[in-house]
Image (cartoon, rainbow, N blue to C red; front, side, top):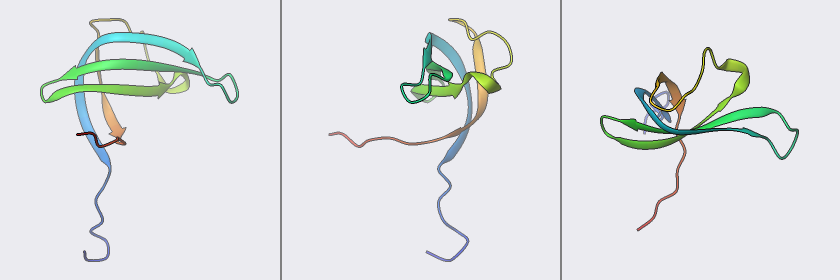
Amino acid sequence: MEEGNAPNPTAMFAGRVLENRELASSLDDSPFYWLWVRTYNGEYDVVVSADIVDGVLATDSIVSGVFWLCGRMSG
């Protein structure tokens, strides 16, 4: 792979919130949200700091953004 052409583990998408919960970090009690989001191409778990949420994250609302991707292979 050429230098400067490394894969970028981010994706931009929008989707409908199927479930959501407000939680607190076990490390420092800082609040965050867990969302289960359905997009055109699949369903994703989304975790977002409460500090950057603008509005209410209710079920059936639409969220959009640029997201850092991580995952685990199964099979």
